[in-house]
Length: 308
Ligand SMILES: [Zn+2]
Image 1: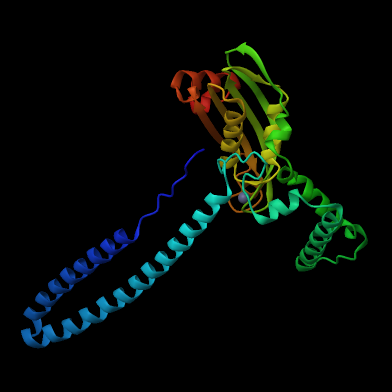
Image 2: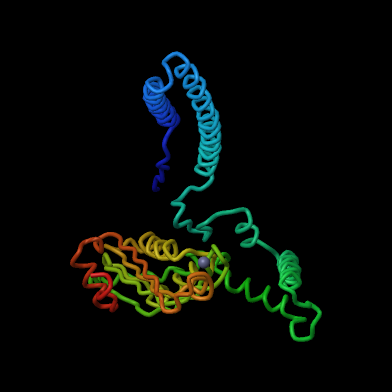
């Protein structure tokens, strides 16, 4: 069982920041008082500046107190949530063996739905897509796109079908005691995923390598693990790490390395429009964190020019 602690700063630190700003403000204002005193006559200037200083300080106080208050209550809320989550999720939050790596009520409902519920789900998406068509200025009743909502709903459910798979079913005991302890690599696995920020695809190649500790995994299982995690809403960094973590957890090898090279349509088609940009992410665990092993792997999968 792994412990994931949050690195957030605590209440006393916030108060410290508050005090520092306070004393800085006081210092600055005192300097102003001295300067003005020389120009306008001491008594009057001091009075004016004191009023201004107090005004500025109390303004800063109010906004700071509000900020600290908000931050504190937010933090407490988060801690409470963390506590309740910790009692429910028994395994690593990264590799939950029943497949819900990013657990939410919706994921659970989808995983356990019956046919009737599946139909309701499809209908809901259809309605939403119809609304989108209307909103972009189309006529949802137009011949050519009459069935687009249904087609899109089915496609979307397929693109995210990884939410209904779990690592145990995929591996299905395909772990063999071969006494093999050399590097195993499956490269150029096609990856089709959806960026969770725009719900637009990103596609590319994944390379997976591991060094067994006597046990090997059925070679076709590696692309299937890649597929399970990529058929969800993702960010490429998390996808890379989840695949590595999953293999580490189910196989317990000496090390795992995963590289993903991909092109994000949200980057290619909109905004920056960098049509040739490739995003490369890596995750190395266990013995792959050693420079020589990592370089050997990058060399074998052909990304050493970029990463060595
Ligand atoms: Zn995006």
